[in-house]
Amino acid sequence: MTRQEVIDQYGRCVIGNYGRVPVVIVRAEGSRMWDNDGRSYLDLFPGWGCSLLGHCHPRVVEAIREQAGRLIHVDNTFYTVEQGRLAQLLADLGFGGCSFFCNSGAEANEAAIKLARRVAGPSRFRIITMERSFHGRTYAAMSATGQSRIHQGHAPLVPGFVHVPFDDVDAVRAAITGETAAVMVEPIQGEGGVVIPDDGYLPALRELCDEHGLLLIVDEVQTGCGRTGRWFGYQHAGIEPDIMTLAKALGNGAPIGAMVARPEVASALTPGSHATTYGANPLVVAAAIATLETIARENLLERARVIGEYILGKARALAGRFGFIEAVRGRGLMIGIELSVPGAEIVKAALERGLRINCTQQTVLRMLPAMTISEAEIDEAFEILAEAIRECESRLVTT
Ligand SMILES: *Cc1c(COP(=O)(O)O)cnc(C)c1O
Image 1 (cartoon, rainbow, N blue to C red):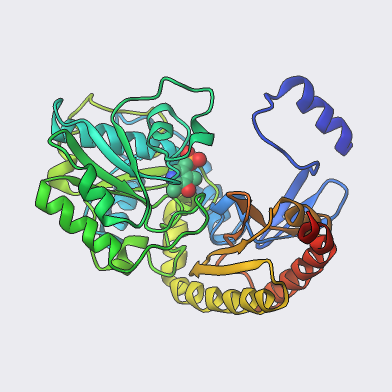
Image 2 (cartoon, helix red, strand yellow):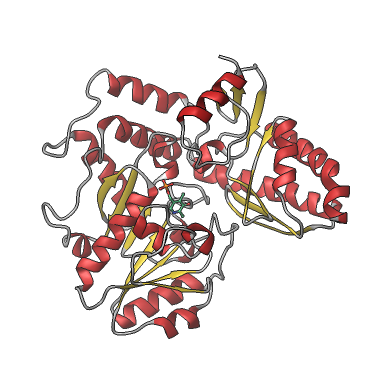
């Protein structure tokens, strides 16, 4: 099929809820993708932050192949060796929590919200979340999300969510009432623009939660599994949450999510209280185990820190050349370049030149590159990005 035929078929048969670029991807490997016209793209946003080891990492491919030939799916009526092993891994890498497995980040957050409300009881149902947060698109996760753009057209929302400014401890303190069950926060806001809070923020939230008997839920869907140079974003702050949620990079592209909760909290999810049919499907669990073991074995957390710094250096150099780059932010492989002008045109121009990046909150160019990207690939990416910016510069600055 030609590119246009595929696009036309989507027009007839696929719901148009995504703003897509006119590119049909047929293959990907590491930090490269190929389209059906044979063009290649350097991908600094592989799988929207899911493919942290790069596309089709050989160890993950092998694990999926092996598992597919043995056992693709069995429901949670039974035990599997794989589910137990993955839960053990997450407990060991994190804070000793117990896992509930699901299929996405939104579902992991749904589980966290349901668990927090069960623990707190019916009179304490409010959850404090942050402005500009992103927690997913299902009803409760969307209601938790602090962005009116995401709520548009979906009212009435699930009640009980209170939004306060991010990185503002006093605002959280002021929002706590006798009805509050939990505080839910991203260690670094991802969709919100790669916003890194003050070092004291998470510790202060931990303290507030302890003081008032609230659960601290960290949404690690984007920051987790090694993205920031540590296994989980909260580990930079030297605290432990009561609940964390994972998805995106957990399966390196295989759709799996997890909610991990302290054992005393987790026990509130009694048999029958929550479920999902595909949860911890052996196929995706095999991918998740291979992902985490590869990161550990190949010392890729350290690599994430090193290349994260390398990319930040490149981004700062770029900021020195273009006055409308206002700030460069990042931790590990989560990088944001804040502009004083809209970034969509730059993203488009970069893609036309064979580089894929993202723009969030209109003005933040975002990169969530793979741990396996090389310095040479980063150099190439920034050469393309500089050209793309130069091409757009005159229009951006005059409009
Ligand atoms: C992507 C994301 C989600 C939603 O995950 P889905 O798998 O798309 O449901 C939730 N929270 C954060 C922080 C995310 O980045």
